[in-house]
Length: 635
Image (cartoon, rainbow, N blue to C red; front, side):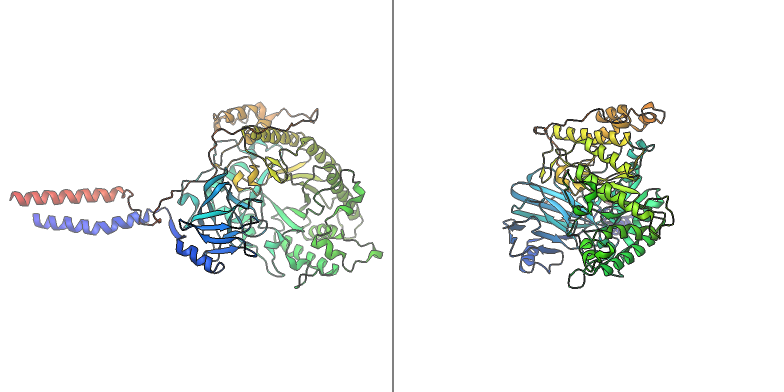
């Protein structure tokens, strides 16, 4: 009998070991799909366009690719930041998430980033401080209109650098690295401002796979704008071809969660599908053809989402970047972008005797949209809107086109304006912003009878073409500006339709180098966040700054929530002096730090603790064997 017990115990261990190994394999948090080796680097250098995972971004022999001493991919002789290397996405499966971990190095301190490979070339992840080494993590999937991601340096930074390693895993970032998660122990922005205006942010369909980001979004925002997915070039890259699955998913998600979705955008000089305004040879088509294409595009696109997308940026950025402050509003046509493909096409075969002019494309876009969905609220959207000249031409255009609509025989509701909203993009700079200019623009736009929306708010540190340093003082200055703006928004909330921020955290922003948003790369609130909270409830803001805030502090009976102390207008101009940068005391880098080892990652989890039940069974089996052997020996 004792021999039988011994045999059974040994058999149990033999049977159990494979099961234990299987359990360990099943415990694996991630699957490594590909890791760049020196052989990959050599293969890529010999044929830069046909590697399975990598693709060259080069022109005229730049950059020069070589193998560094450690087997990494070295890039030299660069004279533009786009000269780099891309990770393709044609190997990806639809609906799946993949996490890319990239290790950069250079001989001099620099920032490194992962960005889109196609327009609008937005930054997806960026290192926090200039250094000679950085590790970036980015989770992605197949994105319509994109062809993968680019591994490069920020705009204007053309140094030599090395991609020391690339690893691609199946699953989200939290499956492969100890990445940051959103700090949620903060007041909800949309709840704080619920009596005044919705608070919005951008979202892309693929980001809906990130449960952590979705939870954060639902906590803070009740309005959403697609960053890129709903722009013309992505929606209809050619006539009759419609990419609506991504926008459909975003719209359905928004409706299910009682979030207002703002359509962005219909007619724009950038990210517009060429077929709308050009022939197959890239030459401008006639006014009549462009007008017909516009009507076809708007009627199909807006009609598809009618009743679900209830506000639209119909025309985006029709005016030149800068307009002289001495410009009269009546001269608004002289300040339109004459290089816009819509302006050019509407200039061809134009009948001046019939008082046709290139600017008619703006009026047509609004009319076609109104006729397609009469219930939608239609916006004109632009930037640098706080400058007096541009403010005036936008307002004058709005007034003139609305007056024209009054006598248009297609207008069956003369009580309504055609352009019912004006979008202030609010892409500002800490060193080039006087909040009083923003206040004056809100007042002037409201005089047109239109609603006002703050559509793309961010405030990077620095000024145009010169990002500043992230210091204690510059962050406080940024916070002061955010607070001043929200003070103004509150004072004029009767005219403001919504306030939307253009990005969720600094490192995800298209202007990431300037740290322009409310949350940092660790996904924690910045001083700017608490300055906004202070507009509604100073006590909550002070608790937050001290790290003492809790949900219990959010009392609906708080007099500060019910009756915020907001002046009707600012009593005097705010004078923001230039700030001398000061060194920042020990700031944690924004880059995530996944585990990196000298050995290739594997899926066998060697060295990890087996599950408790496997350990227990092994202990029992060893005990049985020991008792059996002792009994046999004693016998």
